[in-house]
Image (tube, rainbow, N blue to C red; front, side, top):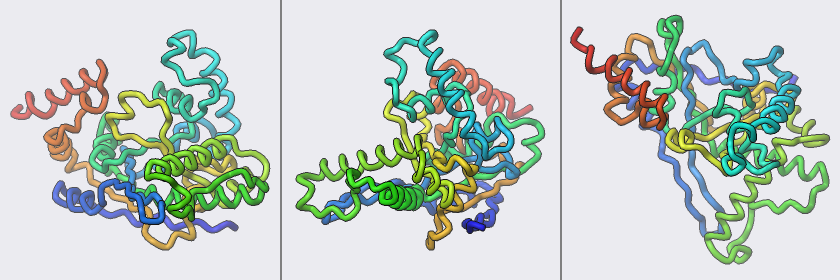
Length: 317
């Protein structure tokens, strides 16, 4: 049986002070260029869940049973959406044909199930999404926030993608790793090479076939992705996606199987009791984390006013 990384034990954050201490232990995202022309990154990403009973599960897995059969549904949904989207939006507002990641992101935006799993670069935003719009049943349960080392995930994904290239005999693929400074005329070239390499990895993962598909299904494959065309919500929410390239595995199994050889801590899990969420929402509001900031439209305005009623105007009643 294929091995998988072990899920981390949940770290309990019992109050706002402990949340601050936990979240501020993560370094902010960084990007720098090393002397040899390598691009160095540091990126933790976060996802909040409305209940600690919920798991890392994309919407397409929730829409179909068994969950690992999601790959059969995706092309049907994608064809249906792309063939009819032009009836409701101008062609100028739609991604070009063939931009699969951008189409999946647009589908996700409008509520169509996809393999994309939303994350954010801010743990505080992730916490807000976890406590926002909870059902009465969810309000009685603790919520959770996942933290994942995005760079560690990307490194493993690039390694597996290189192995798949070798197995396919694809000598045309130029890999960023190991480029000497003389090979790159400027820092701009280094950053451009890094970006183009990630785009190739994503493109091949979204349409994996043959040897690559088998390699992903065996060892798992998950990587970070941002569409070339974003919407205002995704931008305001500091959003980023993880997506699964292993069509025979669920997202979580694919991720934890891929990361089994990772020696350093690459993920953490925080649990927060429901008894503290009223104060936490008020604290986040003070940090300008609320519906109007994250949903810059009429829905966000309505949500913002409802928050004001709940947090301020009726606070003394």
